[in-house]
Image 1: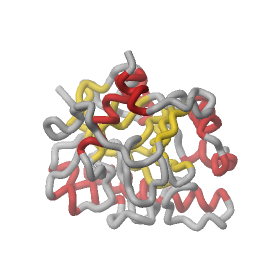
Image 2: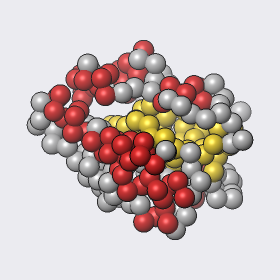
Image 3: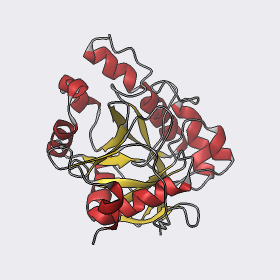
Length: 266
């Protein structure tokens, strides 16, 4: 038996760009046949809805409200809801953090100023994992594409928020180049899109009971398949990138490599 999970979702309580409360998603995902969702609201340096001037404890408490609203409704309906977040660097690259909870956040106020390397090492030390979200997305607010080759455990290969399908093909090729596991998510901001069936997700053979189970699935080949539209992650070699691309090493230093050469080299 396979279990289907949403891995990338935002709530209006915690993400400034979202239109639906956490609780509004539950019955819709349940009707779509999902076993659970992971709430990944925009974190401190992303498009957060929580004022950054607040003391850290109050900021964290407010940040978790969207997840808690979804979790409480999930408990009422017998539907699994898990906690994560999405952090942004330089307004360009985004990372999905899984495996850590509210108490861990409260103990790490320094998370507000972490570098990519510091974030990765701290998350790993805490038992979590880091997945780079939609790495090849090209939107007007993004100045450059940053590929963090050494500070991630996986790559989000398919994201319904990507305007161009080619972004997902590039992401899949990138993950294959690095030998990293891939995920898929809806980047859901509005429950109305679920009704239209425009949702992606991942399948696992085993039910995810805790967010630690999802971390294990990402890091130890526990994702059995992706729930995406046909051909979504196909790579053809003629994809276009109009933004500068900065490929980073494990110490977050620029390598100076061309993205085309990097993806095509044997």
